[in-house]
Each structure stands twice: as C-alpha cells, then as structure tokens.
Length: 292
Image (cartoon, rainbow, N blue to C red; front, side, top):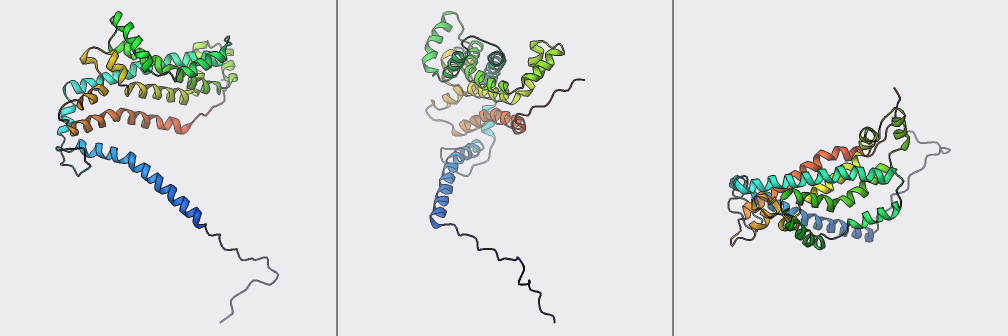
C-alpha cells in the first residue's frame, strides 16, 4: 500500500486560519434585535389572525379562540345597506383617485417642464400643503357645502381628491423629472403635440410614480372616516368606514360581523397592491427611442 501524497515543501499550500468567533456581546445584541422584531411582528399578526378566525366564528368574541366554523357573518354583511356602503366606498375612492391622478399628471408635467415664475415657491407650497390637517378644513367646507346643497358623495369625493393632490403632484414630478428630454424632443420632431408626448412618452416611462401616487390617493379616500361622516348627509350614500363605526355603537356588538365586514373592507387594498406589485418590481426603466 503506497503512502499518501503530501505537498512538496516548496509548495505554496497554506492552511487557512480558523474563523473568528462572534463575540458574545454581538450575539446578545443580535438576539435582542431579533426578539424585538418578533415581538413587533406578533403585534401586527394577532389582530389579523383575530379577523380571520372571528369572521368564520358563529359565536365570536374579542378573545382569540378556535372558531365554530360558519359563514353566517359573511352572509349578513353581504346584504342590504352594508353591501351598499361597500359600493359607496368604491365610488368615493375611484372618483377621488381619478380626479387627483389626472389633474396631478398635468400639474406635475407643467412644473417639471415649463418655465413658471416662482416655481420653487410653488413647489414648497405644494409640499407643505400635503401636511395640512383635514380637521381644520372640514368645518369651513361643511358650511360651504351645506349652503349650496352639496352634502353628497360626489362633492365629497372631489374634496378628498383635492386633499391628496399636493402629495401626488410632488411625487409625480420627481418621476417626470427623470424622463430624458431627448425622448420628448424626438417625438416633437416627428410632429407629436404636447398631449401626444405626454400620453405616449412621459406617462409610460413615469408610470411607477403615477401608480404609486394613485394608490396613495385611493387608500386615502378608501379609509377616510371623518370627512364622509361630516360631508355626506344621505344615509344611503355613507361609505363602509361609517358602517364599521356604527357596529361599535350598538349595545351588544356582533364581533363576528365586525370581523367579516372589516376583512372584506381590506380586500380591495390587498388586491390593488398585488396587481401593482409587478409594476413596482420592474422599477423605473427607460428605453431608447428608435426612429422608424
């Protein structure tokens, strides 16, 4: 039996040094960080778990317990005025988002591409307007709406679109600024007008920012409670957050109905983020223009 081959003495083979051990203090710090993050995660997971379990529990309570499986809660909330309230929320949010997104694109494009006097001051005003609390605006708006009989869902949607417009303009402008001007100039050489340049060049390339702004406006309108409560007078036009609030005003709340209705109320936002996730993953990618 031959002896094993050993590297020659002149070889450059060297034994790797042992790995450095993680200091005990670093391990304790890392363990504490993970423990704190796990605690925060539990704080977010437990309410959602209660929503899921209580919505299918015929005898639901505030406690987190194994449910008595039943769909009676969903059958109750998907009928009558509760279903109408969900539809009212859809109308309120879609109208508000459409108005804010369309006007926001034109305003952001003008601030990005046009020479406007005092543009810096206007941008600062737009930015700081996004932080104005709605509480100081609702009462004057209510007085104006009540004087002209505008306490309905569509004027309220217009008001909500105005409240989300400053932030949407600022966000869209940052994305439009990143669109190369050479692409617009090439389109204008081909005879495209401003609206065509905006529709065929700027909007497709700035779509991630426009979509993010539209989602912000939709969520802002979808979860609004105080504004519809004050500015919408007819009971058959009240949105879903008002119905959720009324669940808690009865002497004996039905927790299963509250959970089922709240879960249904979250579904459109989840769907919206799921549909737009592909757009956000692709990011902001600019392609070159090719003259045919």
